[in-house]
Amino acid sequence: MSAEVLQQLSIYFGLRTRALLLVRVLVGFVIDSSSAHARRLLASIPTASLFASCYALLLMLASISVNAGLNTGDGRQQADVDIVERIDEWSRCTAEDILIVQGAEGPGPDGIPIFRVNIYNLCEDGCAGGDIHVACGWFASAIVVDPTLFRRVVYDDCVVNGGRPLAGDRMLSFRYANSAPYSLSVSAVSFLQCRPAVLFTPSPSPQPLPSPR
Image (cartoon, rainbow, N blue to C red; front, side, top):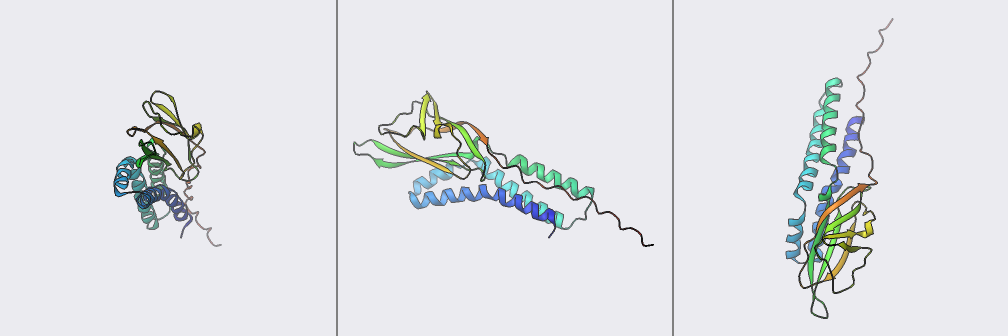
């Protein structure tokens, strides 16, 4: 197997992380919660993120298949570069990669409903999302919410994890009590501490062997 194919496979396994995490989040929530919660989670998964991951994986598999049957040369090098650029475009992390899922846990001792919120960073390992802000209306809770996990700053602006980075493939969880669930959606996030893209440099065209004397 050529070095180019091996390097492309490393990109494939990196992109595969996001798609597998989406499945892992869904399966874990099905086990721990009711089917209604699972349906809510499935509806919450960003379609763009799932499509981007699948599209990038298909491109990678196509690249490996095509390159295996091509001769070395400028044509193959340009095809490699084009495919890598398209994969990089579709694999960038965005606010849609921060997934918020909440579900009812039942009434508390005082009869006020309690809701659990899970916030996931669906980006690859090593790509942390920091300064995460959530549109949260007049968020308030009848039970104490750890302000280092989730805190309302002003109207419709809550900060997650105290502004600290939430590492890739990680989850943050908290509970709150209110008569009805709040609508929560990511309004801003900055991605940092990301690994450099695993790219490869196309190998130069083979040099002709010297003529025998």
